[in-house]
Image (cartoon, rainbow, N blue to C red):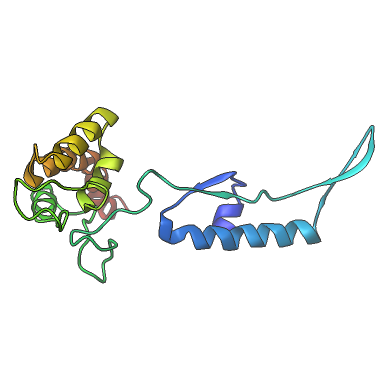
Length: 173
């Protein structure tokens, strides 16, 4: 909480599973402001203001990234993609990631909103790509392997600088 309030933010970008922590932080800010109000003397007289703002939760379009098995990404589930995973490992994990369970055959239409790969598209794909993927999935115009190709490439491109920095970190200490 103090690591949030020290910066006095208006919004805190968190995942859906962390929203309760921000609500606790808001409660601490409210209590602090009750006990220690900011006092200002101005031409209209004395008035009180909040010392600490009550930060609001800022969720992304996909507030949680699914794990490779479709459940919440968690190390305890063994379904994570780590920052330190080399690109071939990331590619293998994403290639075997579960997709829409209703889509059994290539010719079956799917629902990207029920597919974990759809959540990856919300984070890593442009609006045009998402529109094409959603249309292709719902009409069975593209298969799940094609659907995974876009976020796979963008995920690897996005993670590579972080992976390299994480691998270099112990050596730089």
